Image (cartoon, rainbow, N blue to C red; front, top):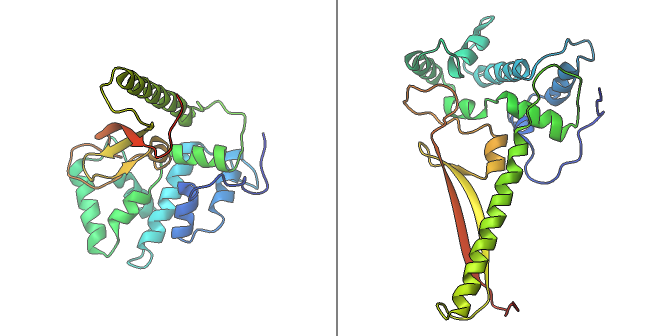
Length: 238
């Protein structure tokens, strides 16, 4: 078991989703509390990743509706259950909940986009805070799937470059200096938002609002692999 006294140094970018929503909803100390609850320290019982995600989402709901109306005890948890994946919640129940919150002045689109999954909690604890514990829970690290994606992108880049060299030798294209960039983008087919695989994973997918019978984050996405050939001004010696 290990616990850092302060967050690990950032590696660039805008920070994790946990940090972003904590700042946006004015929830100071949220990160430290997640660490303590995950490790079972500072007077807290150990909690699972899913329990921590549920706890954060309930707090986000409290913060989101605070200026609009007062929640009764347990109401935030019920709203969370109705908005997020739950086998007993129908599309009609979810739509009714969204419309009711809208009517009371809650920015429901903003709220839904900020709700987190247990994977976001895992990413924060593991990557940003570098904490670990002995656990019987499955600790699947979804970020391990990013490496083979990058390897495939690099291989595609090499294949395209080899073809360019072949086309040049065969006088199919004009001789010049070329480079190839390969990018992979995931696109939500409902709202059109696009992410790199790493950002898509950190954001736990897309939570756009749309009228479907599905529950939870949208899985209706497409993946675009874009080899982008660029001409360089300086001659590259092959």
